[in-house]
Length: 95
Image 1: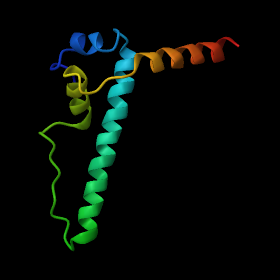
Image 2: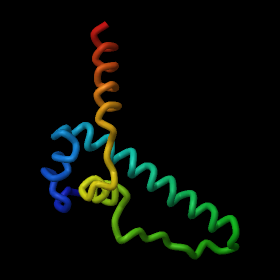
Image 3: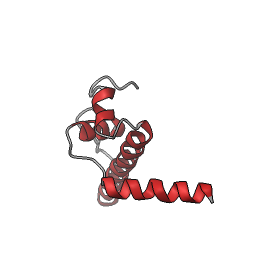
Image 4: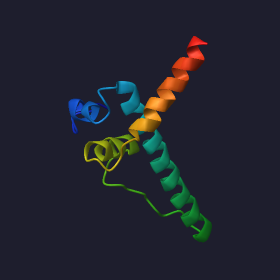
């Protein structure tokens, strides 16, 4: 998989040009999407004798969906929480 659209520069601009932050946000959201789809699939199989459902989400994998959400601004992070987490991590490493 490669990030062609949305462009990586656009995604990085939404995350302070921090690739780690971009990956963290996207992977957390992708896991949430996968868990949601898995839950829907399990509910359907619980009420049907035959598993005949195919889950299709706009033809994209969960990571691509997450990247699109970051690009269009529907997925982001709270700057203050991020700064505090970085500060706490730095303090733990230093001391």
